[in-house]
Length: 274
Image 1 (cartoon, rainbow, N blue to C red):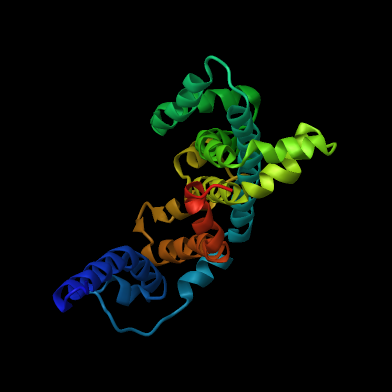
Image 2: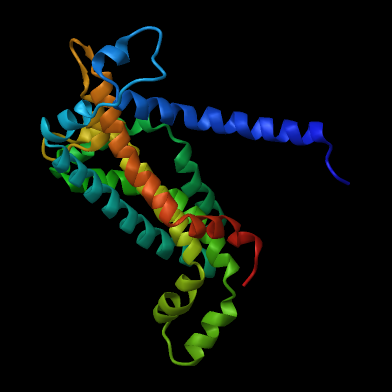
């Protein structure tokens, strides 16, 4: 039965409303980054204006933005790699080996995601202080891996459960060890799950602010802390803040566009058995 024109119109209206609600903040951020100070602070807001790039020039050349970008890239990259490797190994163990408290341990690992981050600030600060990891990349990486790992394990368990054990058995009959069967058979089949886990870990570490503010300093400062630094004593520097936030947003968008098909495949993989 064909949908009537009213129903079709309502459908497009709902989709359009959701798109506007989702994309308008991004539009506002980007346009604020290319407005002059006079236009930006003028009332009512100007919808038509001449774009300028002064705020981008100040962000890129008045502060060591490239160093802060490299800090964020190192932390996010190491967190992603560490979370995927450790999460895959742990999830494989849960999927292939059962013991009397495995179900309870699975639940406990996921339960750690429910602990408010703010409640962990002081314990993490004292731990990193005692280990000498304050204002170091390693301190942030260890903290972020602990945040991303529970979800990565929980996610990857489902993907490993979908891979038939018979394929591993066949590989081991042909002479592979269990580790080689994991690397050559199971992980390639569970690759969509690895991609989703990697994206989650990257986004968690790239955008995190609270622990970066507490655990980092001049040497390891990341981009979210830099953006907050534009809120000065004389007031927020909205144009510079918007320009920095736009630059920070670009890697997220590029990564998502490049591996979008893998993300969709990963989200739907659990519905199809190999």
